[in-house]
Image (cartoon, rainbow, N blue to C red):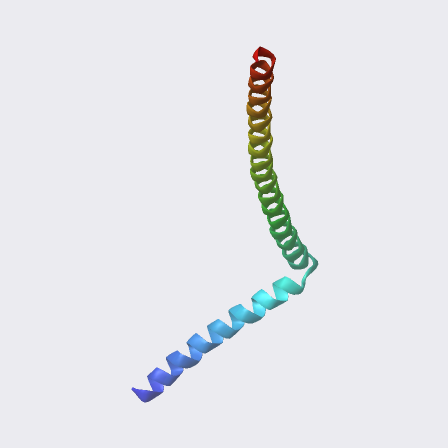
Length: 94
């Protein structure tokens, strides 16, 4: 029984080792290297695209903030102008 166990363990180890060696050999071929480079390029393209999307989202957020500041400044100018006009009208009526 022990011999059968060790025989099975040896077969399993041999199969695993053979698969690993074949995979490594396939990666060392020009086709395997091209696949690895292609995968790296796809990953890089995805990262650049994600970065660009983050930058665009940040730009839009900042633009909205600046737009709010400009609108607030316009409201302050309008209120100040109305107040100044009322003061001038009161002074002219005296």
